[in-house]
Structure formats: C-alpha cells, structure tokens
Length: 429
Ligand SMILES: [Zn+2]
Ligand SMILES: [Zn+2]
Image (cartoon, rainbow, N blue to C red; front, top):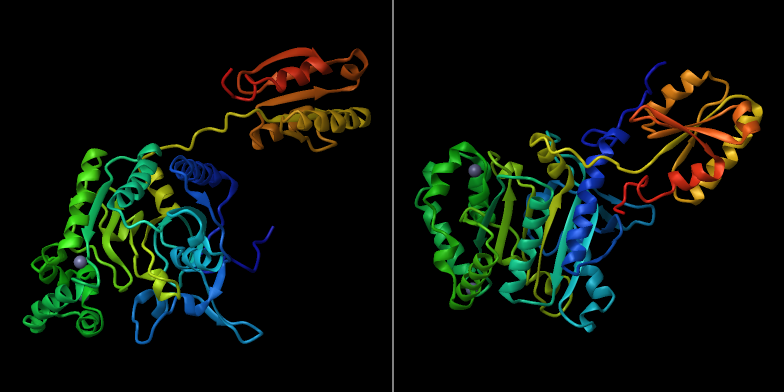
C-alpha cells in the first residue's frame, strides 16, 4: 500500500484513536471543573469578523500582526479564524444581551483556535483550548475563583510541580505612569538593547519589552521597574485582596513582574501556570482581567476575567509526568460467528446488546475463530461471544472474558443480563 499524496498541513496533526484517551481525560476534567464552579458552556463560530481581533488603529501585537489566519470570503467579508476565545465570548455576551441577565455571567468553552505560528513541540497552528470567562464582576474574589478553577483542574489531573505566576499591571489610572517609568528606564539604557524587535517595542509597546524571550534582553528586564510599585490606591487594594483570597484558599503563588499583556484592555490581574523546569514558553494556562475589552468592542464598561489553557500542552505534561489516561473501564463485546446462520444471529444479538447500552462489534465474516479473536484484541474488546451452529441449536452461547481468559456458557437472556449489569459496565454497585 502506498501512502496518500496528501499530508496534514504544517502545524496541524491527527489525533489518532490511541491518543484519544488523554484528550478525553482532559476534556472531561475541564468540563467537570467548569460545572463545579457554575460556568455554563458556550460555543461561538470558528471564524469571526476580522475586526473583532484587530481593533483600533495602530495597535501592534504579534497575534494580530502575523498570527491570524485572515481571509476575504467570496462575498468580500474579511474574516479571521478564531485565534483566541475571549473576544468571541464578549462579542456574544453583547450580541445576546447577556448584560440583562443577573451579573456576573460565568461561561466556559473548549474548542480549536488557529494561529499562524512557527510550529514546534507542543505548539500547533490548530490548537485546542479550554477557557473560562466571568463577566460583570470586578471583585478580587472572582479573580481568585478563576485562578482556583485553573489551579484545581491541573491538580486534579495529577500534574505536580506547577507554578502559579502572578502580577498586576494596573489600570488606565495608573498604568500610563508605569509605562512612562519603564520607557524612561529603557531609554536611559538604549545602547544596551541589542535586540531589534525590542528597540521597536520601546517605541510602540514598552510593556512587551518585559516578556521578551531573547537571552540578550534578560539582564535589562531583571532590573526594570515593576508595575506593582506603580499601582494606584484602588489597584493596590484589589491586588492585596486577591493575595489574601489566594492565601485563604492555600494556593501558592509567585509574584512575577515580567508577566504583562501588550493590549491596553487588560487590567490589573495577570497570571500564568507553568510546569516544572519550563520557562514562559511552556506556559500551559494563562489568564487575566480585561475590564476594558467589552467597551472596546462597543458595549458599556463591563469588567471581566478569565483564562485559557492549552489542551495539547496539558497532554504533553501528563505524558512527561507519566500520568496515564484512566483506562476505559467499560465492557466492549466482539461477536464472533461461524457460518451464515450464526452471522444473522450475531447481527440481532448485537442490536439487542447495544439497546441495553453494551457496545458490541461484529467480527469480520468468513474468518476462522482464531482470526476473529485476534480481531477482538485489536479493537480492545473485553469480551467475545462465540456463536456457531451448535450454540444456536442448544440455545447456550459461550461468553469469553478476554482479559481474564475465562469463559462460561450462558443462555442468550442471561448473557445479555450479565453483560448489561452495572458491575460489567465498570460502574460502582
Ligand atoms: Zn528583546
Ligand atoms: Zn490603578
């Protein structure tokens, strides 16, 4: 057999059946965590008006400059494949009048995002993100709630050694003073900036100087002024209350003054969770407050905070920490059949088993029993029912427990009852 002339596009990949266990494990844990905190599910379109992601004039960030898949459709509309989840959720909040509901509104999503990024380990052009947003509440207790949700999810998945990095970047009242101080600091050391992009950032977006990953920029970043020292009284009170909440919840955090967001609708709290030994490149969950976003897309001023976690990054860390996906405990039956009458019998038995909630797979016809049982192991069947002429005549079928190499003879009715029992289904009695 020859391979197809086509391959999955650069930066994308197939998630084969073998890899679905971890994916399902993460998605299920994420939905459970969201539900435990009362976050309702929302789905938004895969593409949006490009303007939703590229707002304002002269705004320069990596994500809008070069990381979106933006195209004109046949009708001439400029659209972007969704690069992140927050703006679409806020757009939907406004479009559907969710501000008329009791505030705050808690929402979560899990869906693919698209970024025209340089592909590397754990970094894809199509990636899956789990995210939560709480809109309509400015209280620091909800900042703590969102952090607790993300932190608890990673803990419940069994990941260890995670670090919660935390910062406050202030608000429109105090940030201009901080940005001015930062600019002043860098301008006084302009000769020491070896990195062209950072020289450009000094003019266009000084905050982004702080999250530069270049080694040559590290020394300057280390002694740069921190935003915490420049917070106004309100931002400072918010910050202190958030820390008190996290202490109450016994969630350990580390202040990281290099944690910033380049867009001006971000306010106050910024946080990230990184795995052991990974730099900021390895961040698996990132979030923050965006009190200016809803106003920027046409609503009245409305506070909001949320995070997004990369599903592939989480899976990568589960694999690195050797945390297996829970085994599929459910019963799966292969119906082995020998002869034309047995095949018909198997078809109907399969139907009856499935209607009782038992997954049943018909073995391929015209093969020896041995070959059919080999097929059972390749489809990970837990049991095989062996049906031949003799079994049909006597009304007694053979049920083989493949994992334990045991078998018993049962009537059709007892066989169905036994396979459909809660013990067989792997559920608690
Ligand atoms: Zn730099
Ligand atoms: Zn402030």
